[in-house]
Length: 267
Picture 1 (cartoon, rainbow, N blue to C red):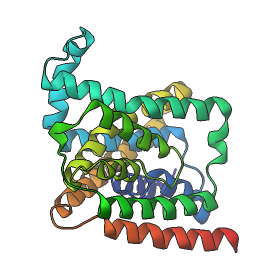
Picture 2 (picture 1 turned 90 degrees about the vertical axis):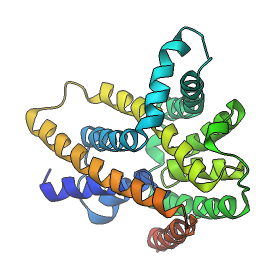
Picture 3 (picture 1 turned 180 degrees about the horizontal axis):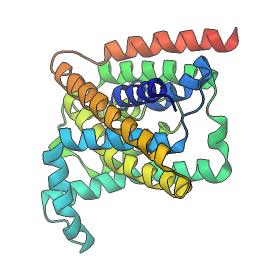
Picture 4 (picture 1 turned 120 degrees about the horizontal axis):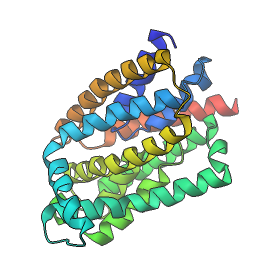
C-alpha cells in the first residue's frame, strides 16, 4: 500500500471509531467511492489495535479497575467494583459476538457493504441518536450501571454490525434511552468497545495469520500508530465537547452524508 493510502485508512478509522458516525461505514465507502483497493484484513486489524490502545489509555483508570477484577471474576467472586465492571463488560459483549457469528456463518455479512445500505443506516440511526439524546433523561450515571442495562446496551451494540449504524452511536443511543447522562453514556460506550475490538481483532487475526510478510507488517505498524493518534485526538475532543454540546453536530453530519449517499446510490 502507498503511504497516502495508509494514512487515509488510519485517519478515517481513528477519527470515526469513537465518534457516533460509523467507522466501518466510512472504510467501506473509501474504496467504493474513490476506486482505491480495499486495504485488506491485516490493515483492518492494525487500525483497530491502534484505536484499542487509544481508548484504553484514555480510560486507563477504569481499565485498571476492570482488569484487577478479572481474577476474582474467574474464581466466581463478584465482590469488588472491578469484578462487577468486568462482568458487565463481558455481558454487554455477548450479543455482538452471537450476532457477528451468525452473520459470518450464514455469509450474510458479505451483503451488507452497499452504498445504499450505508446511506439508509447513516440516516436512520442518526435520527435515532437525535431522538434518544433529546428525549432521554439524565437520571443514571456510569457507576450505577446494572446487569439489565448492560444486556440492553449490548443488543444496541450488536446492531452496529450493520455498516453505517456506528457502534458508539448505537450504544450511546441505547444508554441515552435508558436515562444515562451524555458523558456517562459515551463513557460506557467507549468501555464496551474494548472487549468488542479485542474479540473482533482475534477473529480477524486467526483468518490472516501466516499470510503476513515484512512489508505488510511494516504497513500495519504505521497504520496502527496513526490510528492510535487520530483516535486519541477524536476521543479527547468528543468527551470534552460533551460537557457543553449535545450529539446534534454528529446527527447533522450523519443526515447530510446519508442523503448524499442515497442520492449517489439511486442516481
